[in-house]
Image (cartoon, rainbow, N blue to C red; front, side):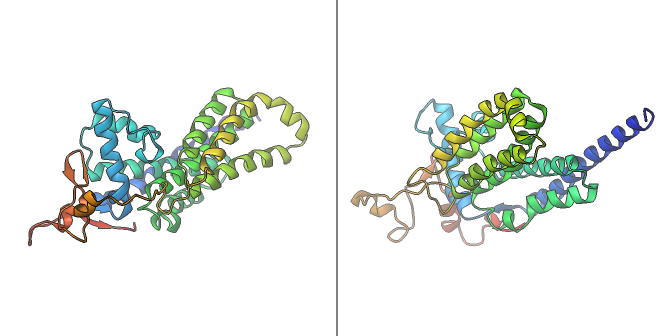
Length: 298
């Protein structure tokens, strides 16, 4: 028995490392297609969320406070950190930051499968379908939705580990991820904020002694529950319904802004950090000059 235990552990470690490496390789191969083909994600990804990212970068470097809102991506640590480092983030940089979230979700799926003792091909296939399947590629232009979708497996994995190991540190990590999910304020965030408590309840009910299980993990649940409760409240705020992954607002008509409309003029006053928006750059380019290309699916 003693001689077989190290062999089992080494086999499990090999399955984990192999699954993670293969998932990263699949992600790298898929993302390299965008880079080699010189493609970017189109539509709302650039017209809306990329503009928010550029504004966030400019506001952070100028010390302004107008960026403090869910739409500005300031609550996402990846975008906030990159906005501090890069004064003028490119479209390619923005897409890679979004794709990086998918990699985190894919690796989390592989680890969940490894903990369930799935074979390596099953772990890689599940992660690939999560990262690049129809649910992801069909909504790729909706950055806010994709980010919440991508971090859900990580939150679920941290919740499982915190309950299993009774770790307050893992519970705190789960609370941070769950708080970031709730601040997304879109329909996917609302669903995730309902699924995570349901997963915790399921873990309690399937245990051999639910009352004892609940009592032994009271500290973990006390650390995690306030974040989930606040997330559900934030995600279900009236007016937070969004079709593009971010809250939409009705703008009041202003006569002085009529000239900025694309219906009356070929130019727009809308800008990001002093530059014209990507849509206007594409419309006002000279004939025969190449412009950035885009696609919506992987």
